[in-house]
Length: 201
Image 1 (spheres, rainbow, N blue to C red):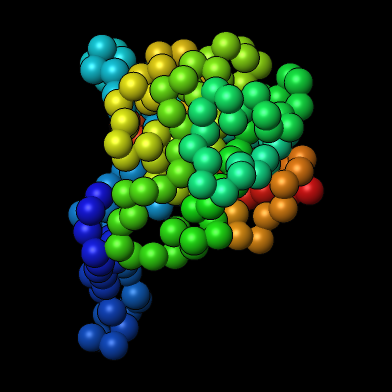
Image 2 (image 1 turned 60 degrees about the horizontal axis):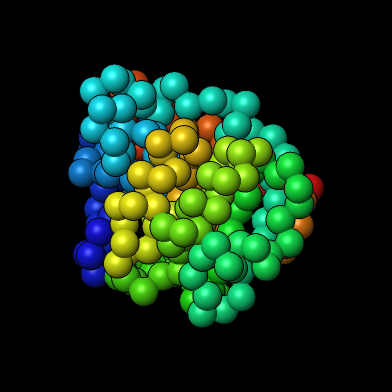
């Protein structure tokens, strides 16, 4: 996670027309299931869930796809319970995506890991759990939880099977209501999976 070069050369040509093959065929290597835009399953931080095979293939597609709200978090503010209380999250919202200072800093375009990113704190995660309509939360960097406190916010959310959607690119997205389409790779039993996510108005 602390690499200066990001993912590095994870895609390579196994077959190349230039080398005399009939087709170009790419291979992937050393690609984390939590690279780029991705989802976490309960097994990511809860070992009992991992051994119970609660992997990404069991995540509810009805939660990963549907109406979503993008809310803007004030600059230099982590997503605490107090911050969430002040945000304009519509009552009954099921999917909440946080646009933060991470987007202004363009952190998702940088290869060097930035440990001071904005994210959800433990009391913020507890606030989310206390609002049972919320089943998915998204963030514009690589982790829903802050680097200084990775474990507890994840456990709070994943224990209630709230889906963390991490690594969103929201530079061209204004706060408001959208339809989210999110289909993770179907990696059976995996603790996470890269996903293509699209927001449509």
